[in-house]
Amino acid sequence: MRILKLSLIGLFLIGCVRTESELTDTKKELIAEGVTESMQSYMAAINAEDVEAVITHYESDSQFSVVSDGQFFSFDEWVSGVRTQWASINEAAGDWGRIAITVLDQDVALAFAPYHLTFTDTAGASISHNGVVTWVWVKRGDTWKMIHGHTRNEPMESHKLY
Image (cartoon, rainbow, N blue to C red; front, side, top):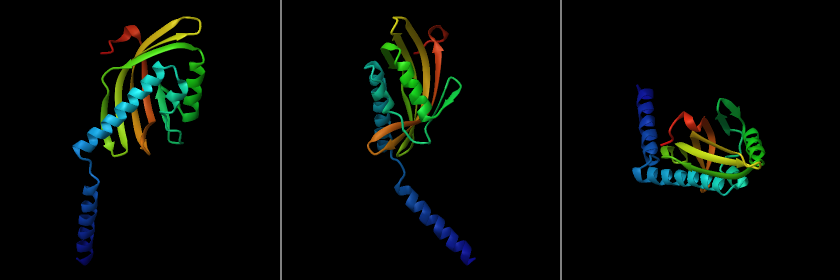
């Protein structure tokens, strides 16, 4: 009986400590705004044709992973692919559709957004496509970084973006 009482007291104390770290609606809104700003900054880097600024949005640790059109990529593989593709791009333009953010914790959020991108290569050929991203963002210091992601690209004619 004594062990049961001590266990119940322990659970009560743990519960009290946990309530201090719960997220208020105001905190969730601020987190969502921060992640949305990072998403907008990411697209601004694409529109500025600044590949290194694009890459700064990725968390460069061993947990990073992206699945794009069914292929798995580590951080090094993803960044290498981004730099290789960017070398053949002359112009880039893109925009997000509606960005939806779900706050999972004070330093973790899930972002979901459709997008439209148009790239013009160095030969002058343009490629446009719609797609959707689902990204997990983590807060590192004062900066939000994308650590896990899924992207799906579709040809322009396959569906309407928004």
